[in-house]
Amino acid sequence: GELKHDDLVNICELGQGNGGIVWKYCTFTNIDDHWCTWCQWFWNSLSPKKGIYLEVKPAVENQIVRELKVLDRCNSPYIVGFYGTFAAEGQINICMEYMDGGSLDLILKKVMRIPEHILGKITVAVLRGLSYLREHHRIMHRDIKPSNILVNHQGEIKLCDFGVSAQLINSTLQTFIGTRSYMSPERLEGAHYGIMSDIWSLGLSLVEMALGRYPIPPPSIEDIDRLFDVDPYGNQSRLEGYGCYKVLAIFELMEWIVNEAPPSLPQKHFSPEFCDLIDRCLKKSTTERADLNTLLHHPFYKRYATESDNQDVSLWIEQVYQKDQSLTNDNNNNQ
Ligand SMILES: Nc1ncnc2c1ncn2[C@@H]1O[C@H](COP(=O)(O)OP(=O)(O)OP(=O)(O)O)[C@@H](O)[C@H]1O
Ligand SMILES: NCCNc1nnc(-c2ccc(F)c(F)c2Nc2ccc(I)cc2F)o1
Ligand SMILES: [Mg+2]
Image (cartoon, rainbow, N blue to C red; front, side, top):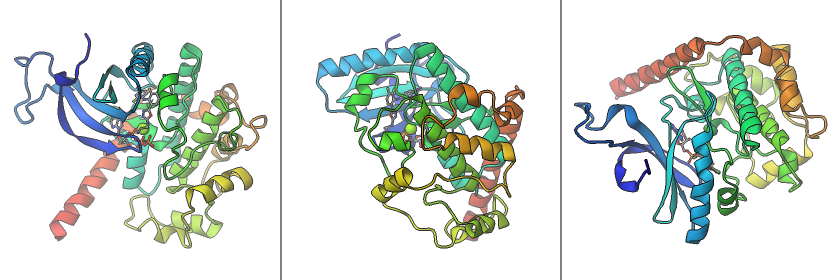
């Protein structure tokens, strides 16, 4: 049925994005249904609510809500579930499936870097999600990056925050790039861009997750070797691992992406297939860059496409949260 603001109860804040806040919410269907004793909310209808602030006329707001209804028909194992949308107090609210493993940017903060076999499964999920959006809805994602790739404890990997509503895209500050850019050179230059731009963003996100840091400006070989000297759960602080790591301002960064050579993976620490896939995703020229179909036949994709279960991802997520929990306990005990 139609979702309304007062159906929702706020649980906690999941995280703050550049354009809005994501709250963990649940809905009451009717309040005498089974309740959890310790948490006083309806257990199996937990879902985050994303509020996107908009200053638009009601007519535009209605158009956005209408366009977002397409999400009702976005059904794929690689796309985050959608529960409904409504406008309230100048905000567009989007209720979606809760992914209890969070986004890959949060995961990356907990571990030094993500191992290649997990990155293989992530690659399979993103490429299948992009394929689904293109084949069934003729849309590209437009915002592929670690924070828009979500995981859960079942080991599922799904995409969210894709540009399903043209009017919402026009109304939000698309010019606002946030701290770091996953945008392709052609998009940064203001040229026409399409699905090939998502492929670049995937490549850049995979390099960041493989090395454990945003890969522009590219780390030196020494920096990378130093990175790999510590185990992935080592307490080594991130910056120590990168020597003279210099954070570029957003415009320096955009100039670097447009003018300098793209980042790549060191053959020393990654398989030749993974290095090749990254090189093909990060070609600066869209004519040289691999397209979706090429990648769906790439050896790196094929190596992980056959494994149908999510068991290995599920086990790894458990590990990440256990390690994280033990570190938290240690810190609490030491205080
Ligand atoms: N469906 C979800 N399940 C669980 N956590 C979520 C879900 N959607 C978003 N989050 C969390 O909320 C945080 C904020 O999301 P949001 O999309 O607003 O910002 P972002 O993707 O981090 O950055 P940006 O605003 O630049 O897109 C994310 O980093 C993610 O960890
Ligand atoms: N922090 C604010 C900036 N980030 C952002 N978050 N969501 C979007 C978004 C943009 C365009 C669009 F059409 C959507 F449906 C969008 N949202 C969206 C799409 C699919 C699902 I499933 C869930 C969503 F929130 O942009
Ligand atoms: Mg997001």
